[in-house]
Structures are given as structure tokens and as C-alpha cells.
Amino acid sequence: MRLSVLSFIVLVVLGESAIAQGASSPACLRSVDIDHTKTPNAHTILFFMKDGKIWSTTLRADCPDLIFNGFEYTPTPRDNICANLQTIRVLKSGAVCEIGPLVPIAP
Image 1 (cartoon, rainbow, N blue to C red):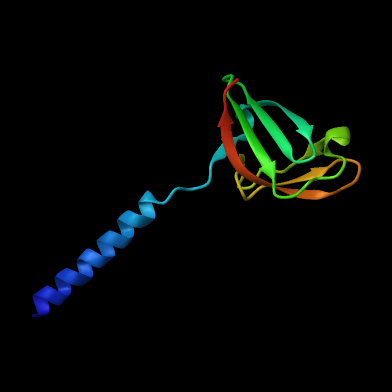
Image 2: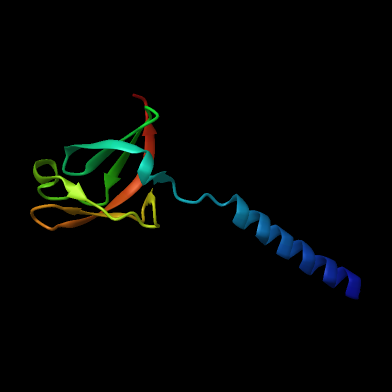
């Protein structure tokens, strides 16, 4: 009986570990790989990568004055722009907005 209980516990721990490893982490872009960005409207940012790929994010809410004044950011975590974790700050208004999912788009 003890062996069965011990085997069950080991299987549960191994199963949880496999689930944790299989869980998807947020998409991140290395900030050094970003060539430039464009803001087509108040809730979308396009990241143009040095390798020619383009990534899009939809902000969690409209970001006033974004298309007129541009934005800045400090990568969070360091050296990465990560989906659902990063904030940007509009230059003139100081509005702070959160990016949503990062989605690759066709060039």
C-alpha cells in the first residue's frame, strides 16, 4: 500500500511539472532586434524587426495622443518587450498604456 501511495505522489508531481513546462509564456521581443515602430491608431503598435518580421500589439485601452506624439518604454523584463507585461508612456501627455498580446503579421 505504501508503494502505491508513493507512486501516486510521484506521478502527480511529475504531471504538474510537465504541465508547467508546457504552459506558454508570453511572447517577448528582444528590444535590440526592433528596427522601428509605427502607430497606425490610438490602440495599435507595429514593431518592425531587423530580420523583416512585423509584430502587432493592441493596447488594452485607447492611448490618447499616441499617433501624434510617439511613445517611449523601458523594457520589462530587461532587454525584452513582453506581451501583457509592458507599459508605454506617450511623450507629451505622459499617458501610460499597457500592451496586449504580441501577434506576428505578414509583411
